[in-house]
Amino acid sequence: MSAPRLILASASPRRRELLARLGVTPDAIAPADIDETPAKAELPRDYAKRMAREKAEAAASEDAHVLAGDTVVAAGRRILPKAEDEATARRCLELLSGRRHTVLSAIALRAPDGTIRERLSETAVKFKRLSEEEIAAYLASGEWDGKAGGYAIQGAAEGLVSWLQGSHSGVVGLPLYETRALLKSAGFRLG
Image (tube, one colour):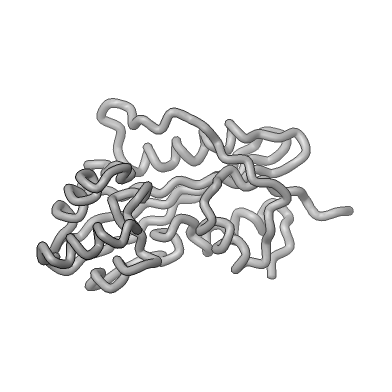
């Protein structure tokens, strides 16, 4: 019996790099183009799980498993946006400065028969109190562009994190422990 095929429903190079740490190379990349607007009063956990499921469904295949993920930065019940401009990134960094926040990383694995397995990683992150100079320097780096909550922990922002409890890879965008468990349960051989 041949190994199952895998489609990664993400254009994120970080997710591909993390998946490679498990010894897995997707057979295809099929980014899901879905509406990512949170529903009215939707809680961050529910939103992250819904986005992962919808992305997996959008890239569905009859002959391959589809792995999709979504990472949400939440301050309390508030879902922070993906920073598409410097002003949004600044607002996120100012809000997170000196505070604890939660990073939720949901993954969904859709089997060819339509069955979906899912997992959620929850990580608590605290930034040091950020000075105006630190915020300006981070904004100048451009690392915030397109990132949930306005930062990428795998870059310079990691030096601003005073503590983290949970999955570092989940904050980057693909929680490896949970992903490994899902892939193993679907019959994938892992490195």
